[in-house]
Length: 123
Image (tube, rainbow, N blue to C red; front, top):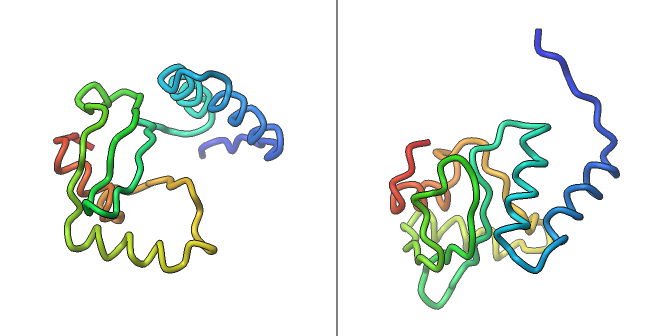
């Protein structure tokens, strides 16, 4: 049986926030946040991406992690029809959507699937 780690949610959020906001260098911030999260959960990579609605794309701003050497910054990932539909559903309900997306299973998230296929990540 796997042990369950008890974590103070407020302390966890505070420590995570310090790491992601603790530097103006986004690469340093991502590295520190990644290392922090790895202490509590399995993490393969972490990234900051933005949706470019006028181009139906996602732009990779920065990434860090075990598999992220292949990821090029400022790369545009064209979204599939499924990815676009997913984004439209999210944007229609912005008041109910988390601004941060945690992907457990790539195949269950059309945006993550598009990014995986375009970049060629072996997840």
